[in-house]
Image (tube, rainbow, N blue to C red; front, side, top):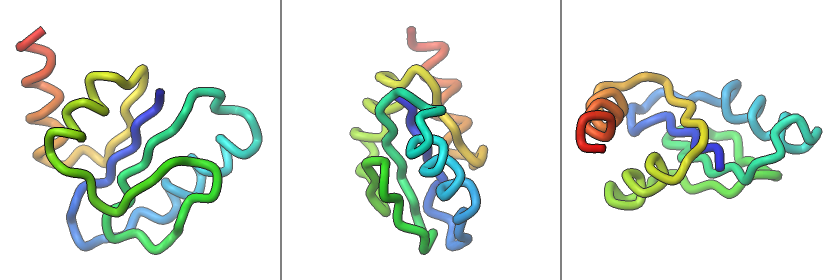
Length: 87
């Protein structure tokens, strides 16, 4: 699974979300894709998505993902570091 998270900052990440959706549509990404779109206005057509995801589900998505794509916000970095040291 590929997990894409853009955080909760009030800045849209439409280009990232649209590109991942296109890559899934075109078969370049073969894995299931889950996207947390935040304040983005683009709505994916080929990927599972939610505007916001509860913290525990975010942790599970990161743990289950083969690839995590993020904009690199503080929570994402802290969460990824914590996962690394906890495992």
